Amino acid sequence: MELTIRGLRTRLGGRWVVDGIDATPPAGRLTGLLGPNGAGKTTLLRLVAGLLDPEEGAVLVSAGPDAPAPTVTVHGLPRTARARRIALLEQESSSSVPLSVSEVVALGRIPYRTRWGTDPDGNHAAAVLRSLGSAGAAHLADRTWSTLSGGERQRVLIARALAQEPELLLLDEPTNHLDISAQLHLLTFVRDLGITTVAALHDLNLAAAFCEHVLVLREGRLAAAGHPRDVLTAQLLREVYGVEADVLVHPHTGRPVIAFQEHDEPGGHAPRTGST
Amino acid sequence: MERRGFRPPLPLVLPVLAVVLVATVVVAVTTGPADIAAADVLRAIGRHLGLSTAGVPRLTDAIVWDLRLPRVLTAAAVGAGLALGGAVMQSLTRNPLADPYLLGLSSGASLGAVAVLVVGIGLLLPVAAFAGALLALGATLTLARTGGVLSPGRAVLAGLAISQLCAAGTSFVIFWTATGDSYREILSWLMGSLAGTTWQSVAIAGGALTLVGAVLLAQGGKLDAFAFGDTAAAALGIDVEHLRWGLMTLVALLTGALVAVSGAIGFVGLILPHAVSVVTGPAHRRLLPVVALVGAVFLVWADTAARTVFDPRELPVGIVTALIGVPVFAFLLRRGRGAAWS
Image (cartoon, rainbow over all chains, first blue to last red; front, side):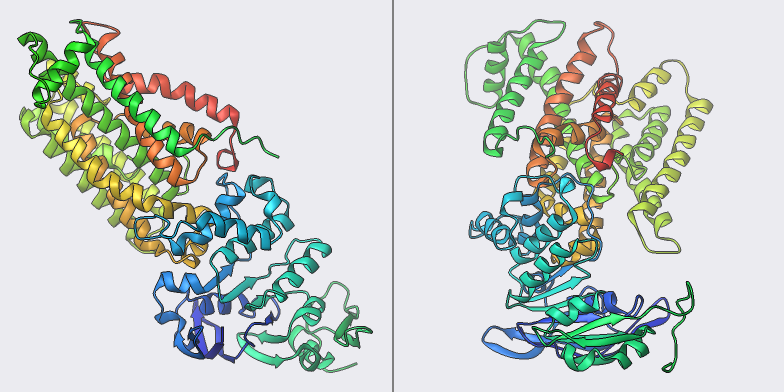
């Protein structure tokens, strides 16, 4: 799905958390949303998902598969129609309800239920199985959610999102708390889905390796956007994160590999200005 | 892997429970000071429904049709409504201790009922109890809404405050005005009792259960979406605020009607959802219909015990549900199912 973010601004608690963002993440590809803590990544994802109303600006998506140009505002879509097209995975997804894995994935079919809660085409069970299968979680179907490991939980939540049959997938730090193998597995899977995906990521090297496009936020504004090769430079890392790094070139992929330097102030996190 | 136990399929459970409920109703009607055969019960009911012309002794017919059947049917409707309302409330507030009376409903109803009992206009009791429940609900929501967003946590706290206020009002009325026999009548009502129910009670409780229960069962599937929090529910296309307050108001209306006919019967709405979810799992499309049927069967038996065990004296059914409910609660607590209990 084509997605255009146009002049988006909104305040939370009096502060402009998202402050005039224009962006066009490439359709069918993985876009990384980068930036330090508090830069506005989560708020931007919620705005794009239609869960928060912007004070200014709009999020435009295509009207349907036949009309790819982004002409419809997300906030103008009826809730159910929106949930059939856009899936959001929150940063912290926890539940104390002892649901089974297939019940968790079946939540993704809620937007397809009728007004009275029934399954109109009788294909929900098949859709749940299909989503579990493509997320590599079929073997977990009968487990209880609370017994899963972090990596297994993310697979199940991805399956829940896929059960919504989304055209736009929004992921808020999906690799948090995962071991490296699970992180690589998840990002490979998401990249190869062919669904327009925007993922907030903390690990710049993972973003550099997997994303087709990155949006770098700083204090609610877009500091840079483009292919990681063009965007992730030593100068940008200094300006946005206040860290010194050498940006190398990956010997096989040609993508950037970031080697960070130590902070010279012991224990200090103050951003350094200028080069040494 | 956590032991999930056996989860019987819904298309099997519901018909079985429905048969159990019908059998329960028939057996409960045969039980009492005057022994009546099940065949006579069926014949009397059949005659009144125009299905049978078989003769039944007039006294038997009066006991079945005018005394026991309305009481048993009211018990079934109240039990189903309380269990259903409790399950919905626990999900809406994400609070395992929630019950249908959470928002000050039972205390408000008690105050209304006690006020008219003392004045001595018994005929108005259901009306006064219902009005009291609604006033208390209104006060709770107003208090919860002042100076901030209406969150479930605030609603629970406001409900607690209003409950205390109404309880104080009730105590005041009793202390100041009640004399002699009205004490017993008031106490019995406060503890929850189905004594003196009539076909009017069946109509009130059954009508409210049918109307509200249908909506709760239909919309209940959406409650699953709250398992991962409000944002996740909204991302699944659910109008979180609208659904939460709509369902809470419906449960309040249902509870108001139930309290009006039976007083506040404790533990049914608190315990049964937990006990039933051990077997059905927490998904509401399975839990809600089963808990309603189990609630109906449970309260019919509890009330039958309340009116027969100490014959000729009758206990308020609320004492029986507490006697059963507390040990069950202790058992579930020891079993420590899921993080909700930790």
